[in-house]
Length: 113
Image (tube, rainbow, N blue to C red; front, side):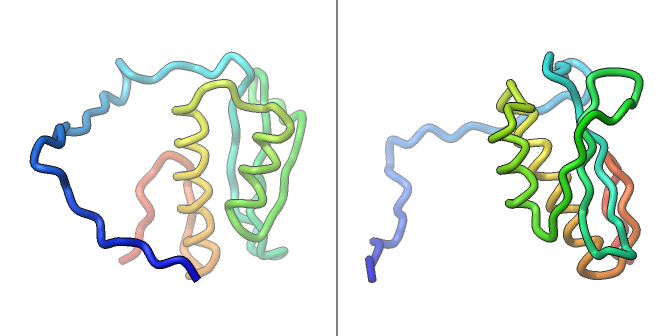
């Protein structure tokens, strides 16, 4: 087993405050976009790939986020890194909703109350 040294922030490390503007920073992935839902009956997450008009061309199903986003990447359905990051975030929210029997609505906060 590999033992890692405890991380230490260097004294000269650059500290950057993250920022994101919901409208100014968003750019459509030219390859298309995804619609995500939890299928409670099958206990699966479903990822629909669309190019336009919410017409789903490909459906990827899985039990955990990794098997879904790796498949989407392998199929070449993403071209932007921020789209991949968004997809991972949303799939994890869908997974947590499925696991804890919560409602999942894409692009909205997960209601855990």
